[in-house]
Image 1: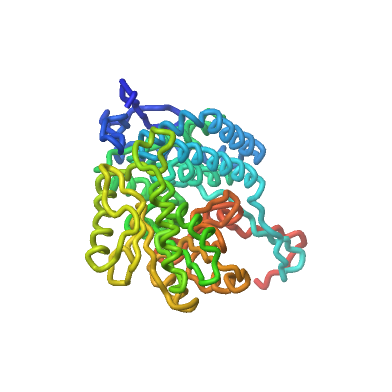
Image 2: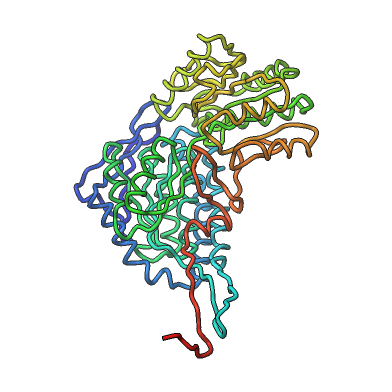
Length: 488
């Protein structure tokens, strides 16, 4: 790395960048080489508690701020993200091993999310509800919920940190963002843009922590009496823990969790178009996206031809150093991720699958791998790989395709490819997922769309108007305009 002095990340509490109370820090490394690239403050329970205290103290004034003020700040933050785009993209590469283009894409979409949140500042509207009581004006009024604890992951770091905080802020909540241990500086860049755009002290706070302290820090953030909402994006395993802790304290949560996205390819599909969408969906950012296309559910009449086209695309992708401009596929984020992908492929090959491309690790990278002959007995059939693996599953007709697509604990994103769009739309409605695209890839996001899954992929929705239900309270308020006669 070109870094000669390790970058240092601090906490943000009540408008001040500060060290952890204990003074402890932890080290980060570059996923491609393992070299140290930075250190971050290792927060304790006490730091987490102080961050929520600061957010609680700031809530009264911020919750009563004018929508126009909130809108202006969020729009300015979007501009600042774009002004800092190259710098932030470089940090994304250093911390997560994503290629530079992935970091640039992250900032572009995050800026759009800030702008959509700015539009929502005027969106917390309620309704007048007819009352049977003479002379009574009854209203359903939307109000900010309070302190929102946001827990964001490393895999799409600018996008997911922005999504976790922008809409809550737009609706008048205050926020504590618990950064991923893997990318604290990237998440701090989002918080820094918001602070520099003019957020008052305490409205947004940042906590970074040593991985060993994550459970204690998260428990403190959830248990604090002022915390009113928790949103978490990450693995289903950790999401269950978050949900259990939140339930103990009767706190509402929004969970966006794991995925095992199926792409159904029917016999009449345009195979070139489907293979292009599958390649992008399976291999973009090394497959480390919750929507990544992991299961290619293909009609047996076209399965071989489709798999060959996909394997040709996979073999043409450049694997290596994410700092190089022509690299398509960089390293897996850490050794555990690489080992997991390797185990899934080895298990599939041992049970009769065949690799048409890739198939074995290359240093810290795993080349894009197309597996054919995948069956339900193989781990890769059911387990989320979070790596550049595409498992081709041959099926006999549309009904079996739907059955296999639904044969998963997950239900986030899906896709159906067919030249018969009305029929594909009917199949899409039978697939158990929060998101389904016809004749397009499973990896998609737009700031104004309702984003979330079903089954073990979580509950609740980010995005656009859907987030209103997640980050506001609906209150019943009345005005008795005429005198009433009471029975006693």
